[in-house]
Amino acid sequence: MTVIEYEGKTINVDADGYLESIDDWDDTVASALAEQEGLGPVTFDQLDILMFMRQYYQKHRFFPIVHAVCKNVHQPDDCVSDEFMDPVTAWKIAGLPKPDDEVIAYLKR
Amino acid sequence: MADTAAEQHEEEVLTDQDIVTGAKEPKPKAGDVKAPELTGRIEIPKLEEGVMGWSKPHAAKPDTMEEMGFPPGLVDNWEEVAVKKLGELLEKYKSLQVYMDICVRCGSCTDKCQFFLGSRDPRNMPVARADLLRKVYKRYFTTEGKLFGKLAGAAKFDLALLGEWYSYFHQCSQCRRCSVFCPYGIDTAEISMAAREIMDQIGIGQKYVNTIIVKLHEIGNNLGMNPKALKATLESTEEDIEEEDGVPVKLPVDKVGAEVLLVTPSADFFASPHVESLIGYAKVFHQAGTDWTLSSTASEAGNFGMFIGNYDHMQRAAMRIRKAIEELKPKRLIVGECGHAWRIAYSFWNTIIGPLDGSVGLKLEYPRPQHICEFTKDLLDRGAIKLDKSANDEFVPTFHDSCNVARASRMGDLPGGQFEIPRALIKAACNRYVEMEEETIREKTFCCGGGGGLLSDEILDVRVQGAMPRMQAYQNVKESHGVNFLGLICAICKAQFTKVVPKYGVPMIEVGGVHQLIGRAIELGAKE
Image 1: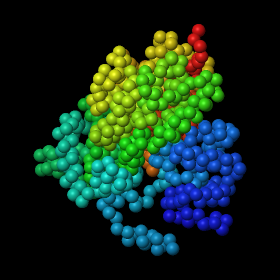
Image 2: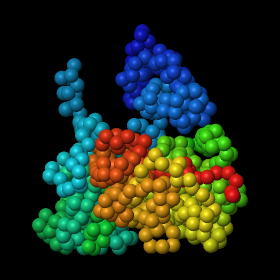
Image 3: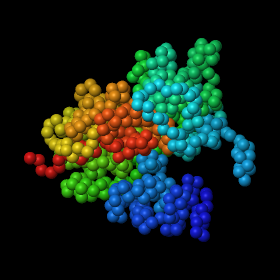
Image 4: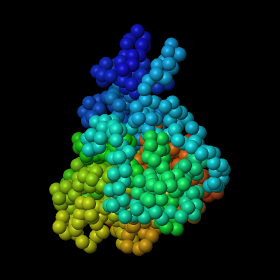
């Protein structure tokens, strides 16, 4: 386990940088995780994407189709890759647990 | 601080397993090795022996190994166990015995492997790879090897050699290009499968492949997509199609009594560009008026059991499909765009889960199984579906033959159908079509660089290198004819190219499925 300090907050992540507990997530945590991925503090558009992914995960325990994410948050078709480079990075910043290897193989750019 | 950490690192005792798998070795960050330069033609590189020896996949975790029935880690008496297993394999597969004995060192295979051409490492020459196993065979199974050792090309199976196995048998995509050029037809894929089977049996497995096999047994697909998530994804895709085309094209799942059961790689359900091909299949079924269904339990055509040469796991994974046939009672069985899956479907299903005939309710007048390309081609030939080529006018496509389809299967009822049918589909869906260099297509096709269980990030460098010949051939037609679409019929090829083409300066949107083109061009709605 690794600890990230961000704006006075202590955040626990696993060896691969995924948030230890999905319930510890809020927009500050998202910004901390985004910084670990070399991205700036999260924007409102990004937050919309992250929240949708979290809701989808809580319902289906799986990745949404990227296209469906953008449609649901009313953003352009390439929103996930434009905002986060790839869906796996978005997933990570959304505080969700590390996906399976095959999901990473197919989605990580 | 840094000094102490370094000292601690030095003091750390390496286990034999660490030595073999290189788990504690410092290595370049995946993807840091530069893509080979494209020089304009595919040529024999300047050699750098052993330069890729550092590349080793992550080792499977102990619990994964145990779930698969393998030892959790490298066993103490591994040499003995490995030799015993090799003996069994030689007994069971006479082909393996022949491949061990018959090589005459003619050199024909040496420059035929994409991993050699891309890495410059002569240890990636097919003969050198096969020799890693052949040395052991000679030492323990031949009189001259026992008596004369190294002089007879034999070697003791020690940790260093096992370490080379772990590196270089994971730089082979089992594509069988070398065997096309071997005058004796030595099949390096079979040798590489045997080597991986032996490694699993002594407790050294590859994490990516083994984890996925366990996932497939548990959930029914490689992605670990549960039935509920699958259904949600399919519904969302149905909505997309209707919004886009105004036609209610359905993606039925678990429909008992449907005429056709479609088994497709799970990547088709949600990865990009894979899902575009799924939409293509659905539109074809819709327009042909075919009653079809997917299965939520047999939601995977892929079967990584083949990559590790383990027929028990291959059969267990395939059994889900037989169960789905028994439950859903289809009359026809069709397989989506997937290379190794089609090899298994075409060459193995009838023996490992078969016979696929009237005894399971399948109609005898259709191929069992049938490839989706064959199905669509037949509809086109009969005029049952119509394509509007102008829908694809932005594309100048070419076609990449997937190795397992090209060299390990057939399609349709004519020789070479596996080459001609997908090409015919692209030509029916597009006004333009350009072929890549003759030496890189059909049975001489190069692997995408990600097949055979190599589609894992920690060995990205191997994948980028292995893609070099295909990238070179593509780049050439891109420059000469403005080609901007690489047509594919394999889930692994799609994922691999999407990831590696940017390393060669090609945009990833230039990669897609054959049924993606069909889906764009098909005329939906009432027939005239």
